[in-house]
Amino acid sequence: QLQLQESGPGLVKPSETLSLSCSVSGDSISSSSYYWGWIRQPPGKGLEWIASMYYTGTTYYNPSLKSRVTVSVDTSTNLFSLKLRSVTAADTAMYYCASETGSYYGWWGQGKLVTVSS
Amino acid sequence: DIQMTQSPSSLSASVGDRVTLSCRASQSISTFLNWYQQKPGKAPKLLIYGASTLQSGVPSRFSGSGSGTDFTLTISSLQPEDFATYYCQQSFINHQTFGQGTKVDVK
Image 1 (spheres, chains in turn orange, blue):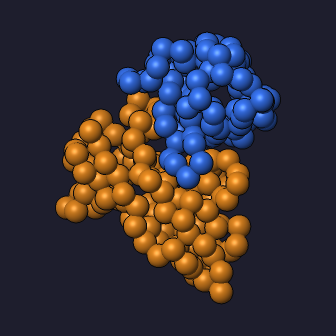
Image 2 (cartoon, rainbow over the protein chains, first blue to last red):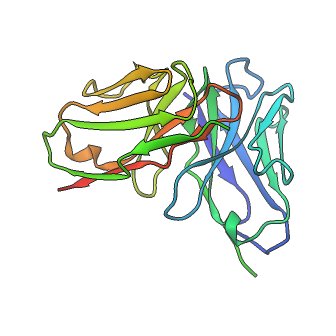
Image 3 (cartoon, chains in turn red, orange):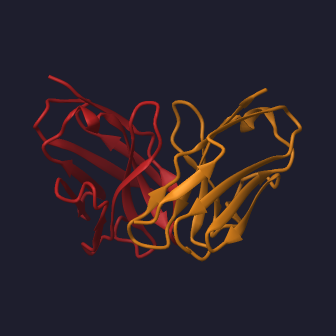
């Protein structure tokens, strides 16, 4: 079974860039079976899809975040990453990475809480 | 974008109750509808995909139905471990969206 683990700073200053990585174990990130996704959840609120990408580089972004988001995959390290630029307090959230198979997210990381504050 | 609306936002129920949660899409999504359960402090867990297919390991008291714009998640006999928040998600288009969630708590 897949295991995913988010990592990165838990505190980011306003206007800076939020950077998170997701380590994948149990299968290759280059497997044709998966897309790799990022989803976030502000404290006490619902889930918001951020982006999905295939190991070849095909990427889909939430239109409301597209201008600030970049996702990438590193097949040599079995990692995929999220960068969110120009953050504000509204970007404070639990950030989850997940694997997408057949249009659903079957495996999730435990989440990484990122707080935007000076 | 496709908007997903869940109802009710919350409901109170007792162990043993039959519980029905609804999810409506702003346009037809065929059966590209998934349901997740989330408990406090935990990541969401996939329950049902493709509107009605039970994920491996999920108890059979959970079932899903619907197609087009209207979908239902049913818990046939609510168990103590089922008190949680439930989210629907459409995957019909590459710009996926989640519903706002339905919280099921103890009556």
